[in-house]
Length: 345
Ligand SMILES: [Zn+2]
Ligand SMILES: [Zn+2]
Image 1 (cartoon, rainbow, N blue to C red):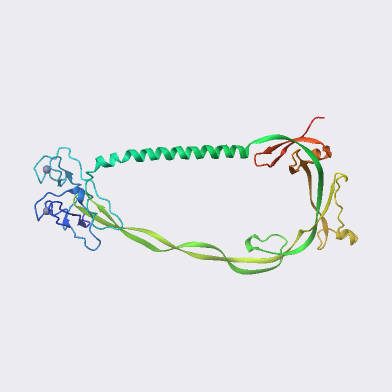
Image 2 (tube, protein in one colour):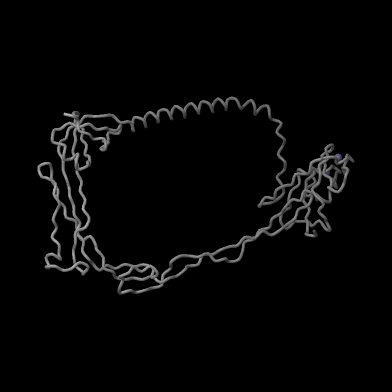
């Protein structure tokens, strides 16, 4: 492979010579100290030095005696002459996007003992915090338990009410709009306009960045890594506005009453009946729509607390004023209406 290779850099720890070439300078040209491969770094972009006619033969190996790097091609250490014999390879350095000289190696921590000593009080503080958190959790738990707990209560029926409703629908011409490819049957007076329906992603060039790889032999290689870039573009389609005849809820008739009046359905007057037999599906015709009914009871405890519950018609009919019933009540004071039951007489 004849791709171009560039020199990694290293700094001499003995004499502070900086920016030495990792491939060319196996020893510091200033003081003669051997290169430390752990301190190799990538040069600033634009300050790269090509390793001319370099051939990659493998990562350097690390001498077990003097820790200096030697080419994979040589069987003996270039610094001390020790044999290669199973010596490990140099660990490659990762390039950072904001690449520059590697930060000066941090002073080796000689303060291991003091940090260990300051660890113990911190550990105690930790335990104390865990205790506090547990305490809060237990308090919150018991509070939640009270909130969601239920108890049985005997309550009395104060009064009861019912509501019955019937919707009246009229066959009406309404305006609506849809995408023209999903126009409902029966649409008329159709007008179409162009409108944006969606967006589509169009490839618009590509974004490239340079990726540098440490070859581990004092050089690095460069290659371009590109990914497609997109822009969004509106997609237009035909939108249809139209008229269509539909059954629309015109009004809702309601009847309500208490225990004195038996529940009954309202009987709405319909326009087509008044007109003397207009047939259905002509504009202006009316018909009965959906029916709904609700049954409520007001309950009170001996202590004067009040609840309102919706119940099913059968239970509502069986309950009489002054009658006692049982019901579950939540810790928050709310009634569990589903639990309502008549007391055996
Ligand atoms: Zn030096
Ligand atoms: Zn050596």
